[in-house]
Image (cartoon, rainbow, N blue to C red; front, side, top):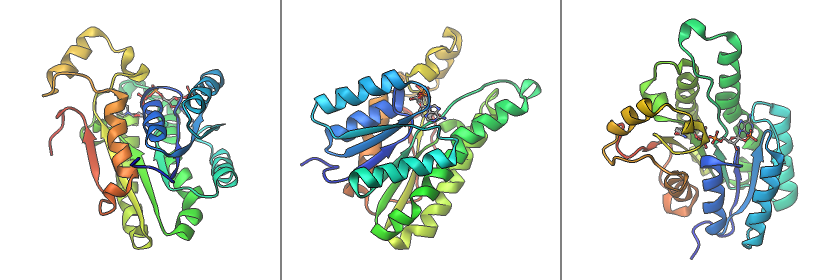
Length: 249
Ligand code: NAP
């Protein structure tokens, strides 16, 4: 039996990296999916074709996660196409790292808009649909940096910590309506986002990981499958790390 058979999922920011891994795993587990991207239209088309060729049902939307009107359009498009929405994976995210002394307002605001406001936007835009269905699973991709902080990432850490408080509040607010909300906090995952780290910094990260390797998008995707599925119907308001043991509470 496929774990996500009959479910409709939205994954934001899925043309590469973790979002792409989640989209692939969701389709493999029988979900109908919609995914978004901001700029990489060609990649999105190729990915959509690839999923369809493998027998998946898929639609994509060019929509900036930091734009509420665009997000409302995505939710409307999904309901028009599929008639329901069961799982939202808020994955789209960016970094604009710099030390505080050099952090200008744009670096602060754009990271907060894309990483944190976006999570509010999709949740808000989908709320009536989820409440009417009396079911749903919201999965918000944070980061271990949101738990621990990181020098040079005050903007990113604030956005990822904000996701945790937001998710716990939503979980408390709508749990009685059968809707769950959880946070996935990846550690060091090999994607384009982390590809440009200098060798020395990479070695320092790996040193602090008990499993002694970087994670893969698939490692994160497996947890997202579980949290989207009916295997996790009694789990809400939780923060789950996928980090090879880097952070232990
Ligand atoms: P990535 O390789 O840079 O991919 C990001 C994806 O998000 C791309 O498909 C990108 O598409 C899309 N995106 C970016 N800004 C967007 C926007 N404003 N609207 C819509 N889509 C947007 O990043 P990743 O490493 O896979 O990270 C995915 C998520 O995991 C992020 O939230 C990140 O913070 C989190 N995370 C990553 C790591 C890690 O080690 N990689 C660790 C912890 C948490 P376009 O290029 O078309 O915009």
